Amino acid sequence: MRQGLRVLGVAIRAEKAVFASAVLASAVYGGMTVASAWALGWATENIVLPAFDQGGVGSGALWTGVLLIVGTALLRAVGVAGRRILAGVMQYRMQARSRRDVSKQYLRLPLAWHHRHPTGQLLSNASSDAEAAWAPIAPLPMAVGVIVMLVTAAVAMVLTDPVLALVGFLIFPAVAVLNLVYQRRLSPLATRAQQLRAEVSEIAHESFDGALVVKTLGRESLETERFRRRAHELRDANIAVGRVRGLFDPMLEALPTLGVLAVLGVGSLRLAAGAIDAGELVQVAYLFTLLAFPIRALGWVLAELPRSVVGWERVSAVLEAEGSMEYGRTPVPATSTPARLDVEDVSYSYGSGDVLHKVRFDVPPGRTVALVGPTGSGKSTLVQLLARLVDPGSGRVLLDGVDLRELPYGGVAESVALVPQQTFLFDDTVRGNVALGLETGDEDVWAALRLAQADGFVARLPDGLATRVGERGATLSGGQRQRLALARAVVRRPRLLVLDDATSSVDPQVEARILHGLRDAAQASTVVVVAYRLATIALADEVVYLERGRVEDRGTHAQLLERCPGYRNLVTAYEREEAERAAIAAEAEEEEGISA
Image (tube, rainbow, N blue to C red; front, side, top):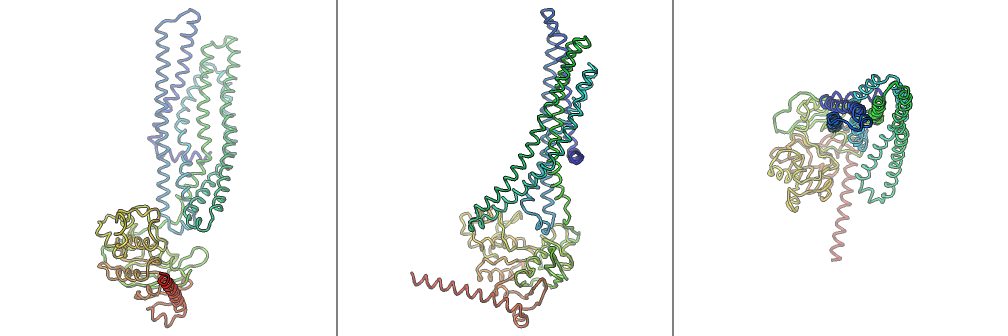
């Protein structure tokens, strides 16, 4: 209960004006509802009973009764409309604020944090958890506002007949006990249901994201079964929540009705004894029927609190997550010349031992360095450090002598561009994917496409730059997607360009033209490329050879071939593989020629 009230306090402090207006509208509704009971009692005494006793009633009394009843009804309608509209505004604003805060936090948190949290869970935090956290807001202004009605009705009942009021008030301890039991039963069930929502979202996301693997390996039935099991668990959890609510809601509804029956029973005896008159009994009975509504309104808020607390805790876990990157204030140099890169004793760990250990090398401005090493040597982790997607556990990455951590927010992106191993394109046009929010003209886009050797196939597309590439670039080949991703990086004219095996799907001759173009461009960049092909390695000015997270050797390709056995074995293995592929391709072409 305390946790739930704290969550509601957050919403009230965030939307003070809207909440106050909603409560005021609800108070108008509550006050007019009580006033309608008084109007009904007045009409009974001054219109209904005289009509029976005297056979008629004066027009003045009749019109007064009509105006009282209609006036209170109209004001009550205004209160209802204001309460509902403003409560909705408050609820949806808080949900939108939570979603924005969660999304901003996702962007602030380093990539290492995202590695530890499934995508489906993150989607659930920003959607269903944010929605659940603020679910009680819809009935909250009504519940707070009808307290006015509750207090007014209670005072009116005491003033009318204290004995009947005391009988009616016995219901409140029963409601309090019932809600306490209800909260304790529902809270763990709501927690489990909310967790299962995240797991269902996670499985669905994995299945959709891995649709190609699912289809090609014939795993449709297995994925369906995996989703079915978790969905059925969610169904059973929701049914358990519904069962508890279905048990307690009728009891909450029944208690006020039982109170009305008790009031009518005792009231009939007091009426017969002459302690009260008929109008007072009608007024008290009607007032007590009105108490059923505030009790239900409070029950609606209390019923949503367990789910709200769970949703808020899951959202807060994201908002309070540690590890967000700190930024400095060192200005980014106002120059377009290639940057100097220094990696000084950099170490990094994923928690199970160092992936990189005291890695040290430098890249002079305008030079191209190839990072070479066997699988698992730490190359991809190193390029993430160069683009400051993660920070090193120890050591420094310097750009022109400035630690990347000292640059302001956005400073690294202004100077460094990373083309990752896995290319991602948005369901947008070619121009939209290359510019990606950058305000640049078509001439610059075409220049970047030419540098990435992508201008030819883009020109042949149906609508050129305006051609939509489909979700994740589904209408393009792997090599075409990689070249668009490269164009997206070079159009920003980075001073340091980092390529993480970003041309693996590109023809070797095209790759050679790309690397030559990067070196000879009018605004050349310092280039660090993770390389596997010999042709790529040979184009680099220097090679840094990594093994088991350490720099084993560095130098030119020829020097490492001569003195580094690990490098020599790795590169010759790549050579043999490329030679075998070339031979297979040649044989296939020869067979096609013979068959033709």
